[in-house]
Image (cartoon, rainbow, N blue to C red; front, side):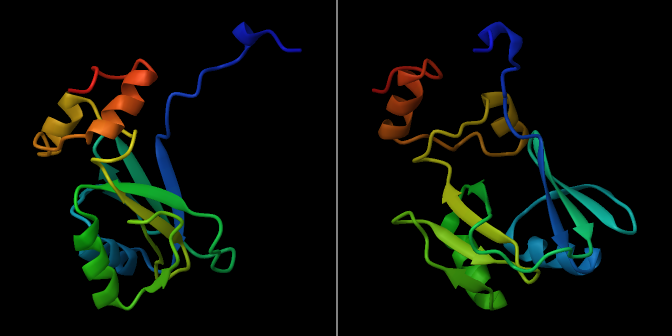
Length: 156
């Protein structure tokens, strides 16, 4: 058995890389779904800031669309994304969550959208302020789950 002190602690995800077709088309598509800051752009790469994390867009697909492998995004307003996804004609997938939104982008990347308030995922007050989202609050259940892990104040 490995000594626990010999293991690194996973702190979080710095970024997710998505294969897309054309970088400009991908920036236009994702710009229809989300407000974002463009961190940087090269001929075959673009980097979209998500507060203290980012998405890397990489030109060129090396695989087919995949409905199982996916990444989850946290947003302040899932219904705004749902409206945009429908307007853009994306393929909507069955979500494993009652209020989830799963869909494929034009390049076959599977996105799973959830809202910030009811889930354990949290951003520091400094990051929320920097993103202009200081008004976001967690539900009591999410605060309870975080508190149980020692990651937040006790719920009201």
